[in-house]
Length: 206
Image (cartoon, rainbow, N blue to C red; front, side):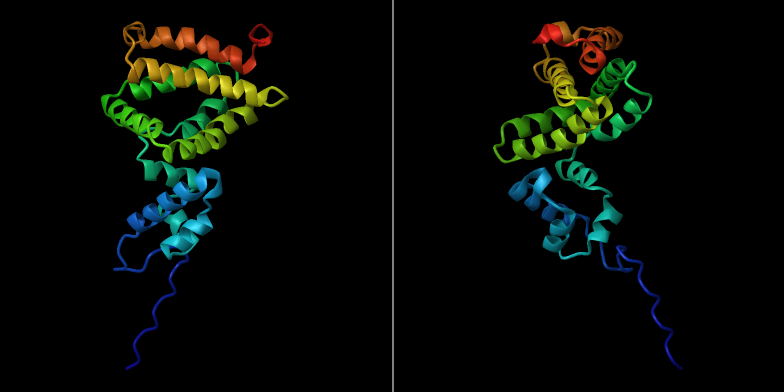
């Protein structure tokens, strides 16, 4: 009796019993990010280093930003959150950004992991450029596209610098004036500054 033919495997999916290759892919990705930075590391090169089909990486992780976040064990995904935050337009986006940051980072688990990741990134000559590439493309770049116009990059950079300052002073340094502030107060005050960077008059900053 002839054995039934094996069903063709869907591209990018592991064979039954083949085992989880996530760690293999993550190790390859970490090496590519370290060697070539966030922008220079490609999914094709990561797949070749891991010895898998590129479609398998997409199956396990999705896009490059998803894979990067998995590699660095990021507890938050600002690039993903921005899609929802900016989907309603720029009006009120400053407050929405601050509300997202404070809500996420006030969670003890997120704060603990986030602070550890920030400290590791800032103290590593290898990790800092990779993190900078991710933020530049996936965060600053996304905000700049939403803003548009000749000042888009500058405005987006100012927004991110303000958010970085808030995270640093409230959660890493734990400056009392910031740690004692109620979330709603931060949303209103810091959100107003972000909103000016997004849509307001920047002539006074020149």
